[in-house]
Image (cartoon, rainbow, N blue to C red; front, side, top):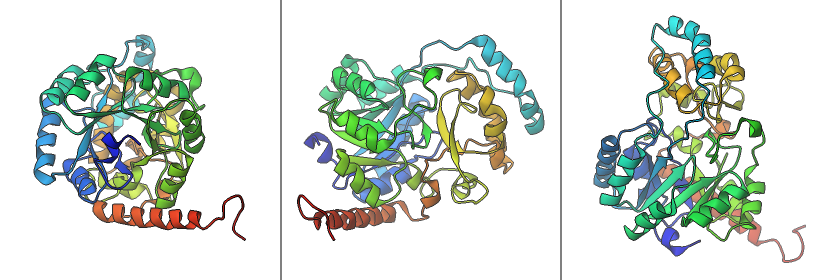
Length: 361
């Protein structure tokens, strides 16, 4: 991996930026202090809200950290389909006694304002989700001393990341919890995502950039597998979601290992974009009918999700989780990094005992 990135953190462990209040400064600080790379999620925050969190994080650690931005989305949603979905959700609004959100509350997530803050007050690392920033943006950040990463879910997307001039690509497998970072939201490709190990191998043969592997990773042995496949570091989200430093709702944390929630699926039910979460009532009832309309559907369902959380109803919440959610461990974030490093070392040692050209036996 490019030393520009590896010099920033001694262990190949990146804490995924989880929007919606999960990746708070205390979580990022704990991970960075333990030798990983902590991340703040700027998604769904104002530019000032992001700036205030950066200031708070800098007061908690002197170690490097990252900030994640959502790319502005093209206006291609079918307004009629969004309206139909809103009518379908009328029963939910009545049940929770709230009004549905305004689907036209904004498409760019304050991208330009956030970028201006990050150029005026540079941070060590910035990553991008839902698309590729322009080459001029990446070059401006580089001149400011910032290392840039961009998520890709296919080899072609990774090639676009390399052509734009990013320093590294986050290779996101279909196992990952939360939103898939596809560059274009094409409903025809729903259900066609690539598994992480296969994706690493394909991207490794397509681009020369360093790779950060993301998707379903919960153990140090999985990090070792990703590194052996060609990645240079691993990004973990669900594994850190249950830590005490995480800002996730307590119901969300409990649901990850609750036998009531037995599996995950990719759904558009909550946001209009494919995202992996624990299957609950809301997902089952509304997922099959949700249109490809992000962020319109996100804005529409926001009051419902907030009220469900406030009333203690996980069946109405977006319980984002990767496929390895049942392996979640309730450890402090710094301790989790230590355990992952120990597991990684053990797995690497086990691999090293295999004789060249053969197998142990």
